Length: 141
Figure 1 (cartoon, rainbow, N blue to C red):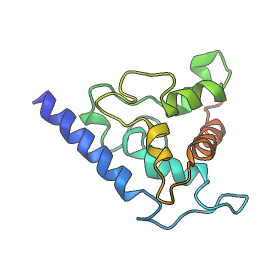
Figure 2: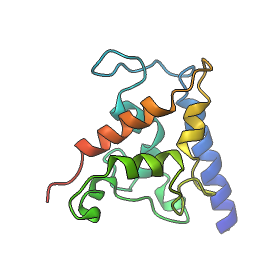
Figure 3: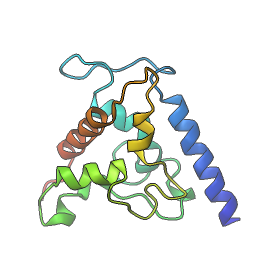
Figure 4: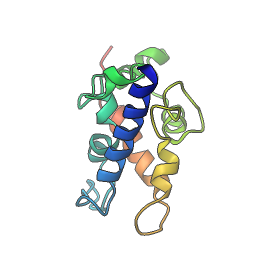
């Protein structure tokens, strides 16, 4: 049963990824007017399925995963009050593997973002936008 749930979770994540590709949905504009670089929109499209709309780990798929998604509003609190943009980017893009992130339950977003519809590598700007968004939603201490 657990294996079936893991396979279902992976299929659901991949379906969410396919639905959120630039060719499937209109691109959001960032504050700078660049298409597809709104950290909030990218988070909603790629992360909220597991981490939830409020980023507290309560997404619709969370209960089906082997490891519950992290509450992303507590990243700074769990790091002695410091939000480490570099560490968060490394986790998202797969350079700092975490259980569940990039494992059987969730794709590594560095690889997924690198395969953009127009053939251009958009990994760094997308990850940077998500990291900046996550920094803005950190819980106050």
